[in-house]
Structure formats: structure tokens, C-alpha cells
Length: 568
Image (cartoon, rainbow, N blue to C red; front, side, top):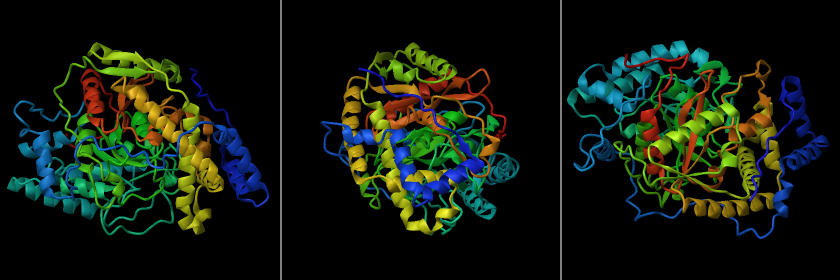
């Protein structure tokens, strides 16, 4: 069974060349021929030649693992129940204390402990955040909008609750950033564009559930325009910079959330992931990022870009932060029928140290298809899992390149169709974004259907592998954070070779809907973060998070160049 993913070598376009190529794609004469050539180079025609494919699967919805709980709306009662699960009121036979942040990072539990002890208050933290935001954001472009008056008002209300001994839940007064793809009441949802400016009247469901647990929503975080590439470029709000080296990319498209967490501005952020958009930036900035099981978290209030591959999920300073956020935001939502079978996630056991009996699947050819320094760090993390008792089991998974093409077709077609509603703003988009949308709007219906047939085949194939192992491990990306070319400003860059390396390990679970988590694996000699990705069974987030916590105990995190401690 052969491994068929390959490196892609394509011309890198910036500046005038990029603008000229995008304009040629728009041409009535030149456009169709160029689009046909691009599709051929990407292997799209090969999908139509595949034989014996199953019926198409248009949504990778997994069956419920247990009776579906009553749909929960955002309310303090839910948050109170969850604080009992995550903190001292847990069952006596399993009383996990929430772990503090892995130094130098602070977790949500650290903020709560500081408020409980009286060491500080949400109002003091809010002022520290606003001061740090004023200093760091011009360098990092992590946020595109922050309302100081709103931040102070939320902090004052939280401080009053703490004084009364009546916190709403495990996030009361904890700073949280939200990717500008999700609605936050009082803020416009621009999706990284210059023309989407409507102010949201209410929170997205995921945001509302965090707010119901007391979260201090500090602002809207930057993203790649329309989430069209896994980089931090944005011509309207500034290129998001990596806190470990501001001359390098954050990855994307949840670039701002990753930069905000990695710099210490927040311990927790909400992102969205249709093609690695949570996991890629999490890996490149050395934080945690969870793409949940498809249909596990409501998409209500998220801008509909790619409806069959999109996942709302958290980025956090530590394993506890993403676990807590996932526990709060997941579960059925009447406003999103795709969540009808979603269970409320199981709480991880933070005391677990022994991974005996855990089988970790590794396909060596896939795992090692990355830069040598990435493989070295990821292999060292894998060895730590073995030292904790896990067994590494080799496996193979045919058809990865077909899956890569199927994912690309799915994303581009759905993105292109989504943009039809605002087609009059075509010229306001960056050239690289227009190139992606033009390809998607030009694809044939037969290509899209064939892609969904490949999806059905890959769901079955991955389920079969995960029937033999408990989880699969890969590097998250094949490269470390790439330098930001000076020529990429302001128009962006078209660099399919780099994009392919960033997405080599992550596209699969966007297509199949399986949960996957990026965690910090270590650092290169130059001090750049490397991520390890864990892929689990549907609804198997608990296993991923407990495994991540074991690695978190044994690893050491490094302080980024651009960093602030809001509790110090």
C-alpha cells in the first residue's frame, strides 16, 4: 500500500505578478483556460476517473454515542454544573483539580484561583489587558476590534459577582478572544474583509455559552480574509505576527486567536477550522487547538463559509483551557440541526499519568513527510507517549492524495458559493482570495459530487483504522512558522507549495469530521514551536485531551518574544 502525498512545486506570486494573474483569471477569454489549467495541476480531473466509489456523503455526521441530552441553552445553571465537574465538587472517587497553566502561560484556572484568593480582580486584569493590548497589538495584529468601555463594564460586573461569592462559572472574569468569523453582540463580523460591516445583535451560540460561564469577551481577533488560506495575511487589518518571532507567520486562518493566546493576552480564544484553521496556527505559535467532532459544536452565529467541513473550536494556553471551553460550548443547539446528536463531552481525568493500554497509530511514511527538525521534535513527543505506557502501532491509509483533492474541491466550491451573496464586492478582495474563489465558482458539479464520494470512502477507512488504535499521531504541520515575505504586503501571496506543507496532516479530518487536537510538541534549535496532532474517534475528545495532558506534564514551554503575564 503506497503513500501518495507529494510535495507541490508551484511559482510563488506576489505584488504585480499576483495582481496580474488574478486579473487574468477574471478575464472572459483568459479566465476559463487558466482555471482549467489550475484544476488540472491540482489533480481535480482525477476524481472523475475514480471507480467503485460509495454513495456521496455530504455531511460527515457521526451517530450519537449515547442518549442525546436535553438541548441546553446558554444559562448560568449549565455553567454551575460544569464548574462542579471541573473543580472541587467533582465526584469523590474522581476529584481532579483544574491544572494551572504550563509556565510561563496562565490557564483559566489560574485566573479563577487569583480571583478566589483576592490576589487580583477582574477589573485589574481588564486594565492590564487593555494596557498590554495597546503595547502588543500594533506589533502582532492579533485583534481587529476591542471596545475598552465594554471590557471594563464586563469586568466590573464580574468583580461584583466575585465579591458576592456568586461567580457565574469557571470562566468568570477570564479574558477570551473571538475570531472575527463568529458573531459577538455589539461588534461587526467582518470575516476578515473590508466590506462586511454589519454589527451583530446577539452572540453566536458558542460565544453565548462562554459568556454564560462568565467569560470576559475582550474583542474580535484577526483572521485571514474569508479564511481562504492557512496563513495570517490580511490586507485590511494587518498581517498577524507570530509572538515567538514577529518576522514569521502565525498560520491561519485563526491567526489572531493564536497570537492572542501565545502572547498571553488571553488564556483562551474561539476559532473556526475548515482546513486546519485552528490547528495550524496553534502549532506554529506553540499553543493548544481543538477541532471538535463535526456537528459537536453549534455553527449558529458563525459566518457560513464552508458548511460541510467547518468546525468551531477553542485555542488555549493549556490542555485544561481547551477542554473546559469545549465542555462549555459543545452539545445540541436547536438553532443548528447538525448538533442534534451531539453529546455534552465527558470531563477529562486530569490525574491520569499512565497511558498503558493506549494504542497510538502512526503511518511512518506520512509522519516523516516533513522537515527534518519537525520530524525530530514530533518523534521525541511520540517517545514520551511510549514512556508513559502507550503502544505505537503502525498503520496505512490508502487514498490520502484523493482525500486532499476532495477536501480542496469541497472547500473551494462551498466558499465560492457562499461568496455569491456578496459578489458585488469582488474587487475589494485580496488577489489571492479572488484566485481561490474563482476556482471554486468554476468547478463542475460532478467534481463536487465525486469529492463527497471520496469523503464517504475516507470516513469508512479512517473508522476502520481507529477501530484498531485509540488515536492517530502526526506532526500538525510539515514546516515551522514560515517567514513573512516583504513582497507579500499589501496584496498577499500565492504560494501553493507552502500551503500544502501547512495542510499536509490536517485536511483529512476536516473532510471526515473526526476530532483532532494540536498540542505543543517542543521547539527547534531556533526556538520555533512544533505541534503534534492527535486524531481520535468521533466524540473521542476526552482521550485526546487526557493524552495531551500527559505530554503537558513532561514538556517545558518557552516564553515567546512578545508576551505578557496578566496575573503578574
